[in-house]
Length: 252
Ligand SMILES: Nc1ncnc2c1ncn2[C@@H]1O[C@H](COP(=O)(O)OP(=O)(O)OP(=O)(O)O)[C@@H](O)[C@H]1O
Ligand SMILES: [Mg+2]
Image 1 (cartoon, helix red, strand yellow):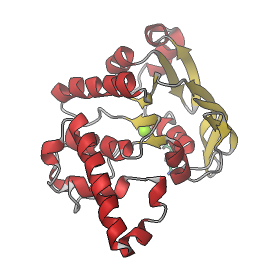
Image 2 (cartoon, helix red, strand yellow):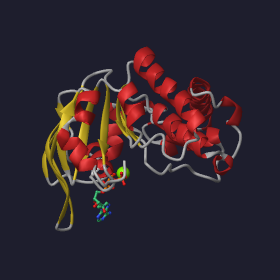
Image 3 (cartoon, helix red, strand yellow):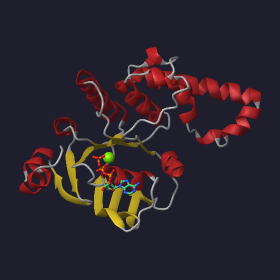
Image 4 (cartoon, helix red, strand yellow):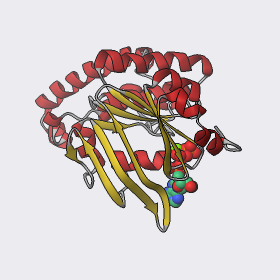
């Protein structure tokens, strides 16, 4: 479903991602681990289209998507969450979801604002979709709160909810458990399992919480200094000498 080949990403002369290759199959849950500054978020940005890759190829469902803007990739079904959630604090949770919905039939949202009849129908359809998404994540009760009033964990779920409004077939999750109360991490893991099992959504998860990755993922990649240094079965990879050496002295 997603095939990344020999991708490099530079910040000026600095090579943050160096010749990285990885793939994720349909409905598969795959992990991406690595020390701080390894290049994980930068690789996500290249895959999702926030940053250009200097080299390589990124294919999604068989099509080359390099060079396409992030909204086109999201429209195709490839979306990401950010390490630091990007909610609109002054909007309610529901409003955050309404602005996130991207339905090809609402090609130009502004057009519908000016056609009141259509706007009403569109808003109603999106509101129903938003309620379903919020309910599936167990946060329907915060629907009418301002996003700024949410807890750290709820903001992470709102971030996920906004992505789900785009009906993705793969989601790149950047540190979904960071800043989340440990008790809530188990609940989030259940949500990810359900998304994969019931909706067939593929997940690529960047995380420092290695136990969670081991439990959720069928395969794991490890990055260090811009390069993918290991990949395979999670416990084999984490116990390998290469990975142990890379983590030695680093922050896991
Ligand atoms: N906008 C930027 N300009 C220049 N260098 C950057 C920029 N963003 C990141 N870097 C550098 O690129 C490298 C990779 O950063 P990146 O954020 O991708 O790492 P990461 O693996 O996501 O780390 P973490 O686990 O801390 O989130 C780091 O050395 C970082 O300092
Ligand atoms: Mg990061």
